[in-house]
Length: 340
Image 1 (spheres, one colour):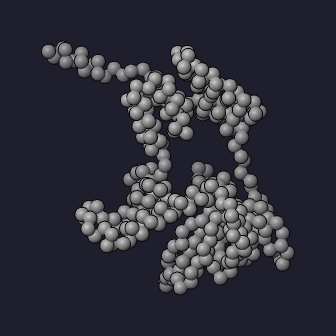
Image 2 (cartoon, one colour):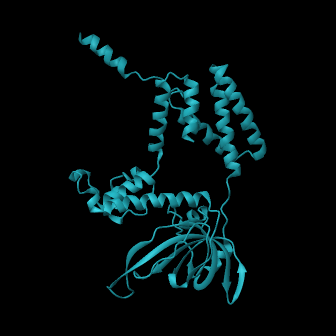
Image 3 (tube, helix red, strand yellow):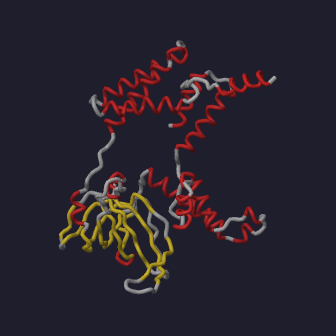
């Protein structure tokens, strides 16, 4: 009996060889990454890469139904060409040199189109050379600049500006919407940049986001020039995200709405901010203490869209496909497609 138990234990420790059918996203990621790597050394026209991608896609569909034994070959070629195509067509960030030259702390009048909106917040700030605190409202918006007035002359200016507006508590903010053209008197500055090796480069990150400068101004010097009619998809999605976050926080603030629930099911403000980050992806409401706690415990990935969430989603799709007895190649393709 002991010998039989030992043999059974040894058989249970034997692992199956790696097969990409069981880890479809790994196969796609490896081929996609190799395509990006190859594009650094071998340049091909994006049009030619896209044409090859279409041909390999047709070959992949044909192999999936007719010759499944070699279906991984055209599937790998699809993701390899897709990685090379993305590497060749990836936009290079605009350095926005002209805007950075004007971000010197001088007040200037700018006009721009709203491309992103943040919520109106109540903040507390400490007055300079004092311990007194001041309560006020603030709202952060991102603008695609149209023009700037400098030394009395108005001229066109391209670039992105992250603008923070401030107002007293008794002053109502105007209803700003996506695609509105606004005018404001702002003080602009450049994003921070540290030359230490390995330090996060805020300026490069903001340029990748389309933002070349930060700015601040008072709501009294802000006005809406015209209302936009066609908002961008990203701004519309951001607005929907904020509306969902605001409703969840408002639900937590209404004590009577949760008074009938058990104590362990009631939401306080801190619980609502964490749920907002997990459900809507809006982490702007997280307090510094909550952020620090998650960062120190190494669990901040629970509040962001990470590989873990994608792996859970892909595993669920792959499990359902196998449960309904879908062919393995078709299940792999569907899992990769839905994960995209």
